[in-house]
Length: 182
Image (cartoon, rainbow, N blue to C red):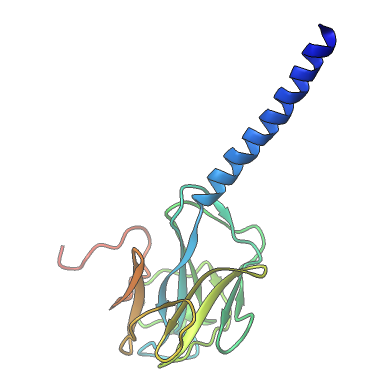
């Protein structure tokens, strides 16, 4: 009888580990970081005026430390700093160096990270990489990497709306953007 109880305890222990592993995997599935908004052809300076906004569309916080934004200009155009966690529903703005001085709209928020980035004005792509894994990819113009978006006029951004992109006024504001006509 003691041997039988020990076997049950071992099986229950293994089953608990299995269940815990499934729960952890299920929760990580709900954490998804995407390229949310791109300003690749600003009205002002090309050097200092471009930006890429990431968004956590999942239900869990995601550690994006060390993730890389690769572009058609560079395999490591920008690297997210260590100890960077993106909370659910929140965005993370990566902008060109000197963004605060050269952004098209002075009301736009300061970026969480500044690094020299180079985005093509008519054709290009951005990949969000966690190590070797492509988390998201977006292209415009003649490029065909990842999700293809419409091209945007100078000074406008492309922004993700569900599973598509649209040309829109850039809205790099804190919190939830409110239409100016509201």
